[in-house]
Length: 81
Image (cartoon, rainbow, N blue to C red; front, side, top):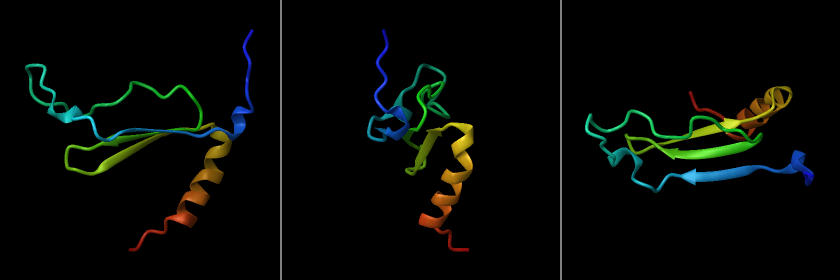
């Protein structure tokens, strides 16, 4: 039996920002990208470090909710051109 707890309200935010992922060398140089192969849970945000010192944010979301998310994202974080 599987119990589902109102998962439509859940948001998962996970940070892989601090581990030195880009310092790993398996013998052919440092990696271009280090992160999970996929995000399997909806509404999961993964914060990853970037070799240039910045961050990348991966996000998984249901397709029917994507337009609303993009609209809200742009309203909250306007881009200065």
